[in-house]
Amino acid sequence: MANLVVHPRASALQISLLLIAFLLAVPISSLARPVPQTDQEALFSEAVDAYNHNLFTQAQSKFQQVTGAHAPDAQQYMSKIKAYQDAIGLAKSAIERNPDEQDAKNMEYAIQQLQLAIKVKPDGPWNPNEMLNRARELKAQVEKTHADRSKAMATEYCSKAVDAIKAHHYKVAAQFICAVANDNPGYSCGGDEAVHMCGVNTDLAKLDKTPASGEQEPLAHDSNSQSAGLDQAKAAYDKNDFERARRFFQSANGEAKPEADQYLDKISRYTDAIANAEKASRDGQYEQARTAFLRAATIKPDGPGDPQIRASAMELYLGLDRFYAGDYGAAIQQLQSCARAGLQKQPLVHFYLGASELGKFLVTGSEDSTLQQAALNDLKQAKQAGFKAVGHDVSPKILQVYNDLAF
Image (tube, rainbow, N blue to C red; front, side, top):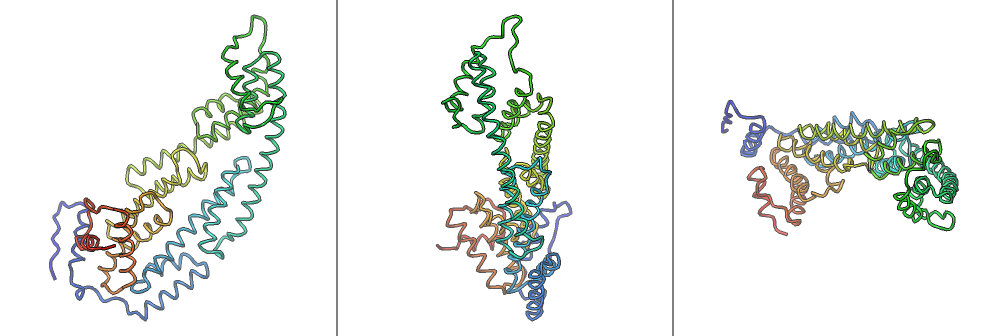
């Protein structure tokens, strides 16, 4: 057997790459003997049984030990467990919020996550079907409450806007009718659409000079005006204009202040989560970054910075990290999750997924034909999509297989 010589100043990554290259160069006959297939059959059967009984921790421990013909199936089971646990965790985080922090978008996000979990394992732990029904009930309640409030607000604000227009107080009129337009652009107020009235009175407000001496502009600081400002702030928040929303919320007082403070807290927690995620990503701490992005997604799924997409991107980086560390099993699990998520970089995902599968096939004795076929299928998908392997630091054996592929 050849000797592996490592320079004393070699980096951890260089050592990992040397080890991979060394292992791929070692004759198959010199590798450790695999666990007998009969034992592997029993181990895989025990793992599946634990999975079926929702003993996920036990199942994961056993699946990680499976090699040979059942290795690809074991990896798929581990990917299922991870996808299920992630989906349930995100859904629970949304459902268990305080009632005053719940909104229809977050409930819809929880529903989507639960549907994903049920698709993976309908009879899984934590009663996903019961949680789904609860999420749907909460969404219906939130939507009804919002609809009732919106209807009452539109009626009231329309009336106040019309009164302000009659009094030529266009700034006040714009404040009220624009709040209605942000919620329901087509709402009919005095025979005109709210969105049109908003535009007209906004233009007129620019010509609306400061009231003459001794004349007080009505509603400038009363509770109704505060309510209109709060609705404008919510509209800005929904549109991800956090800076504008923050200014509105910070100026709230009286009865509007408690709700404004809740939104300010959401914005603060969201921006902190995104900032932490970005820092962790820059530092190469991809698991921490992924967790932080997911935390932001539970606060506002469609928030600025696309936290859900960024979380999936961190999964890709984790997969590449595991690949270059020589942990092909973990790399396969992470990259399979990326493939299911449908990231934009699918050719790259399939290339490294195929490389991980082929690497595991080679270092485990080249006996698992199903693993080899999975590798060839993924590499072929990458090649068909036009992926260029030039510049990617992978084993020459893997590159040769990739370059020789015909399609």
